[in-house]
Image (tube, rainbow, N blue to C red):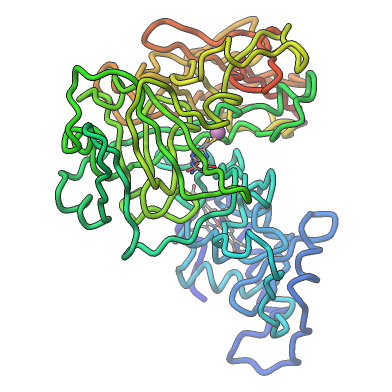
Length: 498
Ligand code: HEM
Ligand SMILES: Nc1nc2c(c(=O)[nH]1)N[C@H]1C(S)=C(S)[C@@H](COP(=O)(O)O)O[C@H]1N2
Ligand SMILES: [Mo]
């Protein structure tokens, strides 16, 4: 029971001291016999997910009421609240510094009960999603079936490489079950034959290449478009974007092996193993030029953040097309072909295209707009969260910025007054070669909020290496598909008394 607070800042030591005294009065450590704890089900725990209902969490089979610890948490209140009503394990797996004796001891002080033994969940018979993998509870779910979810803003820019479990997930169909031993990638070669490559062939016969690249869905930030006029499509927040270090064979090497030459032309089409009930598979294509470009860094990835590709992200193999819209990064890759035409797939032809705000479902002509490939310059504020209440004094504003096509981010401008005056944020992230800046920059601004301020309207906009900037308003770029929202991101917060 020695000073758990010694690793903490001065301010918190006192608070911890107070708490620990109380804790030793109420709690019954293992050594002290006491009355047995009440028993709760997971459902009962789940009801305690907000301060109003008290905040409960579980660890192992113990239940804790940590409401009184929220303000004392060195990692901040908003982070504990992400685990409210559920288990700490998936969060502490990401923030493993919690697995220290002083943290566990501190937690014991808040014990209020134990979990009742539970029945394992029964799968619904005939559910095509029954084989979907387990997911991290912090993900904000857009739709469960198919699974579409994004990391909460509070965690999105905590790491330069998004932990794979928190990486946004955008599935159009159930996650296919693939046996890596019998898996084969089929490549239509230059002479019209089909090459069949095992995972081992891909790993052994082609050099392994690693690329840090950001993937962004064209629908990122659609919620802001839906607020103007509903598109009735997934209301993504600012989190349909994430960054990973991908490892795999270069697509270029595989195409050369299949007899293609850099002077060839056309499109490279990809098909996934995920199927609609009628047998239609997910598909998309990219220009042959991008696929063959020695500086294009297009990968057939079998690794994500140094580990085997997770099932949600395309196990055992996916395409990673740096700088290009997420939709072309085909997961669970089954087949590659080269031809004069783009992929015939619905997702290449009838989706993921940009239109004028004037175009309606009655007037839309999909043949008139090019398929989205490189995405425009983008940025968003991840901290503070919208409608947060802050205090005067020091304020840290955080976010991400990224541009498509390998353009780097040269600057992020941040305003605290809705765009009247501006500050330049500090950028952080991997330095990547010009034209090959595939990964985002995280940015941060330290500002002072003067006393007497009532509210802040925080705005950010990024500038890429082509000096392209984000448009100021969402309205004029609204479109029926709700794609390509890269307007200035705005977050309003109220400022309370210090
Ligand atoms: C009741 C649950 C929790 C308790 C008792 C707790 C306790 C603590 C303690 C004692 C520390 C300081 C550790 C040290 O420096 O040795 C800490 C740090 C931290 N915690 Fe938690 N934590 C809880 C839940 C969470 C959750 C759910 C998250 C994330 C979603 C989280 C994120 C963090 C982070 C990011 C830090 C590092 C802060 C910094 O170093 O700036 N914690 N926590
Ligand atoms: N086979 C297959 N590939 C796919 C998809 C899919 O549904 N099936 N979704 C696409 C879309 S729209 C996006 S934005 C990215 C998302 O990748 P992630 O889930 O790894 O974040 O995968 C793309 N590749
Ligand atoms: Mo997407």
